[in-house]
Amino acid sequence: MAHHPLTVEQFLMANPPASLGGAGSLTNLLSAIGLVGKTLARDLRIAGLLNMLGVTGDTNVQGESVKKLDQIANETFVEVLQRDGVAGALASEEMEKPVFVASPGRPSPYMVLFDPLDGSSNTDVNMPLGSIFSIVAHKNVDQLPGDNDLLQKGTDQLAAGYFLFGPSTMLVFTTGKGVYGFTLDPNVGEYQLSHPGIKIPSRGKVYAVNEGNYQKWPDGTKRYIDSLKQSDHAAGRPYSGRYSGCLVADVHRLLLGGGIYLYPGEVNKPEGKLRLLYEANPMAMVVEQAGGRASTGTVRILDIEPKKLHQRVPLIIGSTDDVRDAERYLQATAVCS
Ligand code: AFP
Image (cartoon, rainbow, N blue to C red; front, side, top):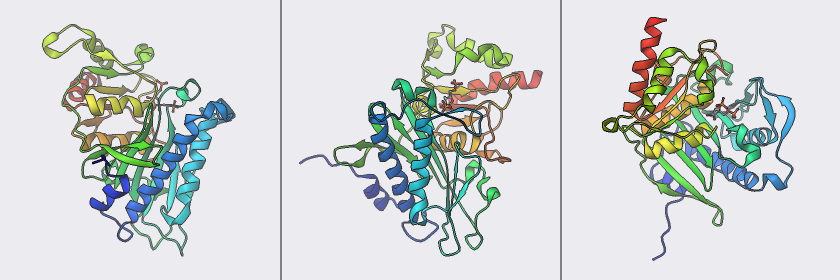
């Protein structure tokens, strides 16, 4: 008998997520997001042949140089998710302002926040890339959504996940009932269940951080990273360093094998680099649903009350025991400073 893993749609039909806008509407939204991933996987596979590499010459709201693939990925998310009223509002790392799609005749209970292409430094050198998405409810569909409706705590997310564009394309997501990984079979055109019920080990042997920033860190962060390099066989140290430049790829490795990813605050930039609403929150929901932990070093990511759409936070995420170890070192600095 041939082996036919569940497609993501079959999985969602068998495990229907709590929908707001009528039965199946969150399933419809997740399927639309799945189409975005298939489209991006197709483009990325031959980007070098389609004049899609390099920069556009613009800078985004973050003040970062925009890669052509950043723009293509953002346009794909917006074009697909504007259709069919699957989402009422869209917010992106690449757009200063959200796109409000809902209209009186086309309300939608869902809003999607996304980083359309994570790991932009990897686009032109064929290294791993990702996309990250977070789905929140527009609670009062009788009123059109506004900027403040998007500023919701991570604990309010209805679903979150990512695409990993690596040797294979994967869709990994949670709707609050565990974490499931699907591998895209491009020949069939379907995501098929390959990683049911992902659980992150309580401790790993891998750490992911940009050590080039070492001199910018507070002492506690330096001491933590130094500790991972000390030889202590009972504690499984030294850890191995694995840093790809793509949050999705580094966290996916930890999700399956355990360990810790850090983009910590710096002495002169305590807020760090990563964005709360469309990077830290969705990755934190996935990792917590898999049994892991995500904090700023002092505060649980999912408990943070957002103040601004593109707000940045430090991110310490991964195996529970590893993140707790890091928090002890970072909080020791916080107390002293
Ligand atoms: P870009 O998408 O702008 O490359 O940023 C990627 C990212 O948000 C995250 O995916 C990486 O882990 C981290 O930033 C890389 O940042 P550094 O290049 O400063 O280490």
